Amino acid sequence: MKNILVIAALLLLAAGCKKHSATQTSAPPAPAHIFKGISVINDVGQITGVWGTEDDDWRNDAKWTAEEFALLSFPDTISLNGTYIRDTTGWNVGPGIHERPQNIVITYPNPVYDFAEMVYRGLGLLKFKAVIVDKNYNRMFTFCCKDSMASLLLDLSDTAKFKSGTIYRMYYTLSAKDSVNFFKGHGDILVCRQASPLYCKGNVP
Image (cartoon, rainbow, N blue to C red):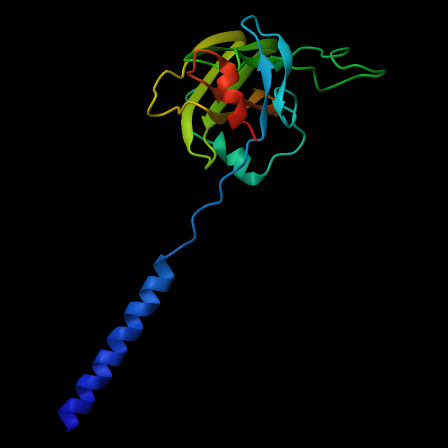
């Protein structure tokens, strides 16, 4: 009888540990971020309209969450030595001195079939960082350079990685030695592998 009680107690203890372990290791899936629209951009980098609801795409963004800042924390070998910002007075509309220039980063065309051009024009010698993420903030592409301006051909042709009819987001920052992340922004990019991009327009929320 005594042995039976000991065995029963051990079974209850084992069951309790198993339940506790399962509770500790399980976690709810991370919420997906909804990218609601894009700025439509032609083959020469001109914004020609909007699909869905774009939220300050390709403009200076005053507020980022800690999660968004962390997306650009990937390691790189580009230093801030020698970087500087030239005078930006007059870049923005309105009276007074402005520290935030108008749009200086863009990726086109948008929607994109397979390859896009990413361009930034410099305000001095700057460090430029960029990352493309999916709706779960998984990094799909990272880039970093130091230049007065740069142009990069983005290869989005991998159909397994970049799904047709899907919006991805590019986050980017510009930094100088005494002004880290003085310009930061994002732009949403719609990948569309249809003969006409209009077929993918219905996928924009």
